[in-house]
Image 1 (tube, one colour):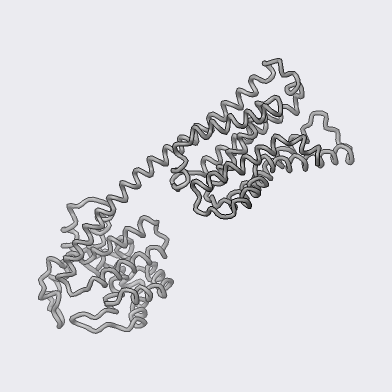
Image 2: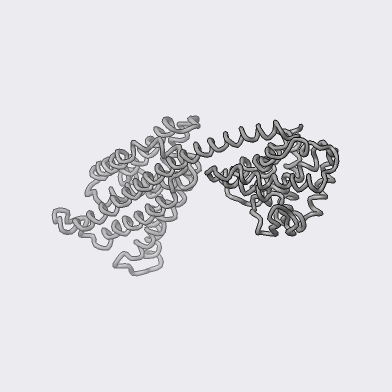
Length: 436
């Protein structure tokens, strides 16, 4: 044990520093600041330096077994190098996974931080010519990386915009380059002894440094791209909020005239969101359709109150006028811009189209109808059936469900009806949450 400590004391120091360094970031940026002592000990045990000690010792013992016990002749140390690189990769993968688990930094963030330390440790091994030199170079490289990233540390710990997987894979490539360069000391032992001959190590060290600089530069580029993405996302969020406010105001005006309640609008919006999510639409589409669905009957603003609130059956002429609300909704939104408004415009125009082509105003059929309108059509009809109107009583929710299923492939898209059946329990919860 004493011999191992004497042999590996520099790596044990860097292992302790790895644990301390990450504790500092837990205190400054982490949400859970409990169990700091346990985290320190864990940090030491999973640190790249400590993990490399374990891997190296296993390689040495396995190598001795192959050479001494099995009698393999390995004058060029090729077997040792292959074993060393293989076990390095295995133990670093394990260490990175444990580090991500203990720190809670997932989605390749923890793996990237860990691999960065791995590369710093390997680079120090290549450049250094003594134990104190290893500590010195390790500290210098750590400081360089910190100074390079210090202005972005808070951003890195709070954003999900950085594509950490790409950075991680780049660092993995750097790790293998550095590992192979370090293996050169085993292939050419004179590199580690003839230290005064600068030509022996100049190209080796230069290649290691240039590769590392490129890796650090790539990481900075990834961060810059992520910041630009965050700015665009914030702009989009503000634009979306502005559109949402316009829609809510228009919806309030529509509610004031129509017999349909505000709860009807909210239910249709929530049903549409749920159906879109169940069908696997993107997160942005799911959120947008919830807002855009509120506008599906905006065109009723231009329909007379007498027709909208008529208690009896509409005449053919009145029905033709009522059908115009789909086109009116499109016209009202025609001169507005924005992704949500565009979706709302299409929904307003097409939500009364039928899968079998017998709907209005254009007589579209099947997938000629926008998917968003297909979704809102089911949501709107189901809520209309289960809500009381001036001209009818509310249907029982289970009877309304059977009617939706009955119209599968006729009035409604089969895919939307299938999603409706799949999430029906949640639909009932929404119905209970937003009662008239």
